[in-house]
Image (cartoon, rainbow, N blue to C red; front, side):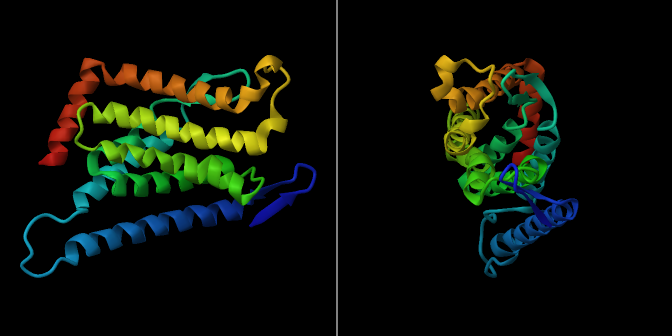
Length: 233
């Protein structure tokens, strides 16, 4: 299910490997969701008062957010000449899970999203396990940092921006360790030492700017307020 290209020194999943990986991710998410419901709701002691820490509604809202984030990650609205593309608000729908439900749920959802992103983009080109961890697992799971701003004033925006910044840190570190030799010739040589930072934060900042502009539009604010009301009902 994994092939090795000696010329490039890279690994890639075969078609069968991708199918198996998708199935494993889906099964893992289902098991985790079922376990969460049992542990925090069905597993409550008889007569215990109060709501469970993770409810079916939370799982449903989290799943809906991820279901929006993943296809939006395919919609590239800005392409940069040296590589990298800004997507249509895909990161926001991951970070909002943490803002809604806290760091625990936020990091869990972001980790599931990291696996989906790896299957989407990383499975066809893998240099090593540490490279995969930095470029996919650690980078996208870092979006769960938004959970630390649950309930805080302007927490949705602040948590989103810090999560984007944290994702860029892991991507940039991976760039310095593994991708410097792949710097395109047209990239300014005077900025060569900043290549991983510029490459990654160019599309991350662009997407963040687009997202913030969209979020402050009155119709979007009204829609988010309606979702928040339904989520808390």
